[in-house]
Length: 254
Image 1: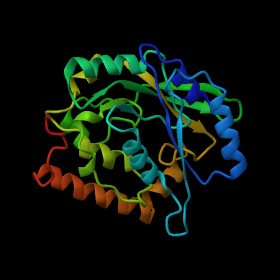
Image 2: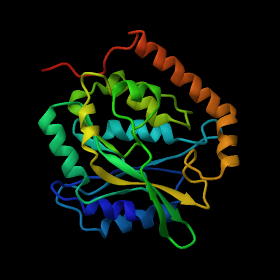
Image 3: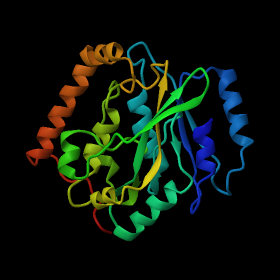
Image 4: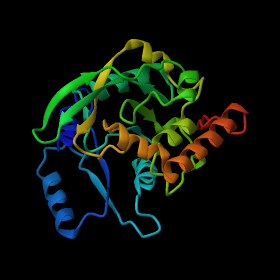
């Protein structure tokens, strides 16, 4: 996919993908392995794939995959990329340099909200849509799409991060609320206005869940019991953060 090719195009660093996929048939799994093997990964950077199987009780494993693949990547510099989004060639080199400069547990770039026509595969619109700058802004609303930041996992105590297996909305926000903090995260990087990728919304598809253009479909998501449950969990987490009931998630110095 274009997402994988954008990883291969990164300058200033080598990327090793840790790929989580759900409910892939055996034939498709073999084809995926073969396709990955054919790509020119740098030495020591061949992808690691983990296949997840849903159950009737847990039909959507996006929260499980997000959290478990983060743990699998280990104590390293880690960034996320969904299968349908793209990173610009300078993206990870820029974020990596900033992390090394600041010594923080996370740093940010900006991403464009980009609409792609699913029938033609063409970009039809690119917008500036995410404008938050501070930790207070972030507590109010998630202004950091999942692929707009990089983490230094040596400075994150992943053992303290909790997640719900059945959380199918805003699972990334639930994760980052537990990692980002006012003092330990590089909020100043947002003043740089450095754009690192495209957050792609596919016109004519519901693949992005909340990132759909159709107003009625989006309203249906927001009114669903599943969404309301996720919203309640986020409210509880915010209360704990604002009340001092959740410690800053920073790994102690050795």
